Amino acid sequence: MDKIQLKARAKVNLSLDVLRKREDGYHDLKMIMQTLELHDSVCLEKISNGIEVDCNSRFIPEGEGNIAYKAAKLIMDEFSIKNGIKITIEKKIPVAAGLAGGSSNAAAVLNGMNNIFELGIQQDKLMALGKKIGADVPYCIRGGTMLAEGIGDILTDLEPLNGINIILVKPKIGVSTAYVYKNLNLESIYERPDTELIMEAIKAKNLEVIAHNMKNVLETVTKKKFSIIGEIKSKMINSGALGSMMSGSGPTVFGIFKDKFSAENAMNFLKSDRWDCFLTQTINEGMF
Image (cartoon, rainbow, N blue to C red; front, side):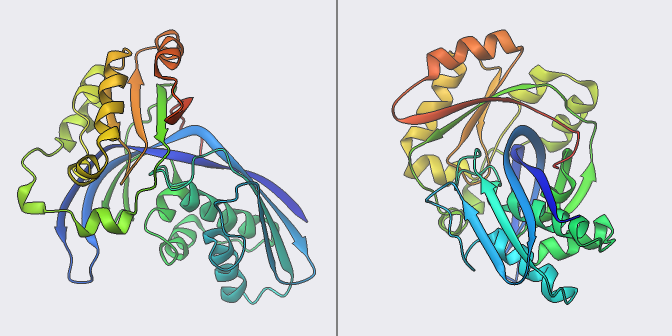
């Protein structure tokens, strides 16, 4: 095999709780993560030597600063691969949006390198390698509906949520994940997600209970700095969403809709020059 094409899928958090700050500077999390149909296309092709990254987005670095580059280099160093690899990324997932677009690209590269060079790496090993690059990468390798704990790398399968209609709204601002966690005051958080309740609702396929109980404690920081987050959430509910929440550290806000008709109608209501809108669905057929 000399060439492989992969779908690197976006994710949202259906809940996000930060339990404590660890001695190593990271935070212990408890969150529910869900794969979406929205995806980047990642093509890997063998070349004679080196690592080349080509991307259609001007916001993505194409050298060693690219997380997909780091994923390729990790595999090449770990398994003493002498060939080179060309990585072509067609971005459809918004950049720096709280949707794990970069982590998903890295996961696709790890998976693709495993296949194209016939390395036979088991998924657990691949996830351990992914953790060296970023906390979301192990989840992006596995995908689906998951409870994520630790720094996001301890994963437990939940009942799959397929075909749920989601609208993503990405305001035209940038949010630094480092800034959000640095300014997070755990002692001032008085409203946290009931993760167990949401997991029970997922098992029962009770969409309204899921949507009504979604919470993300990182909103306490991001909404305070960017009022547009709260504005989008309100507009999302007014457009007919069963529930709305910011994904990750933001700034993307998503809404859950009871059916595709409701979601398509809401898209017309939500359109604005101040943000980009995407209509997608939850999916559990795997990240790739």
